[in-house]
Image 1 (cartoon, one colour):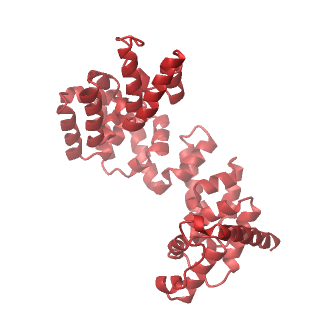
Image 2 (cartoon, helix red, strand yellow):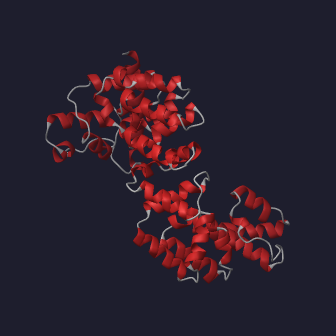
Image 3 (cartoon, rainbow, N blue to C red):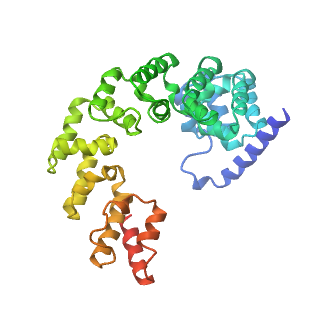
Length: 372
């Protein structure tokens, strides 16, 4: 009770300060006179809105959104939930963030519903506050029927408890364990190794819902991808998620730039992500690289990963630098055109901007920042 009183005292002291700064906030910090009656005339919703606004610090719009998912007519359970999070080291803003994402928690018994999940996280070496604040949605799931079975299943393929739990909490939990097991077993039977299963569970869990998984695997194999290679998962995602009509449309987009289907498929084998780009993105990159810069499109074929980079944030600013270096003879004409785009920002600046005399570096920085 003492912690709850202190929580409310700190919050209302903070609220009083915010009221002094009211002109600087885009939304009012108190409920308008007709807010609850306009939204819903029921006493229970009015009480919920009042509590979310006055005790939890929600703006009216956020309170109304949360009140559509939870309602209560006394403060007993909500107060106990807020006190529970405070007692476990969560700050006011962290608690507000959690309640905003999963307001249903305000009507639960935290000792029965939330504490066992905290204990499970701690047993696996996770920081409770950081993990829960990042993604509190799993607190609504059953520990025995969902979280633990998902963790134990993913752990078969994961290199550590920590990575398995992160995958189970934030990745593959949108699908039932039974579905995951059947689809994963199919992949294992078709020669996909555990390492690629883990990549799939961690990065592409939606693929487990693919109805034609077997056909997609066979097709990807037929294109020359070996199940043991990392690119196999990306190729499988492309073939299982892109309808044939869209696949053909993307092939046609490349063909308009003079590439044959065989050439496109060669690029796809180098990096399957090339077919995951939109037609608009493909045309934008080709138009910039070939139309504006006049550079050889075969470079893009040799390094299809370039299509995945941001045109505005990476390709354009770096291309301006490379173009300047070529024009001034500061970069060999036979040097790789694709390499400068693959470095991290720090390495790119070191290798292509900051390594010259001050005057040149200043000019290059201006081009680079202007391109960004």
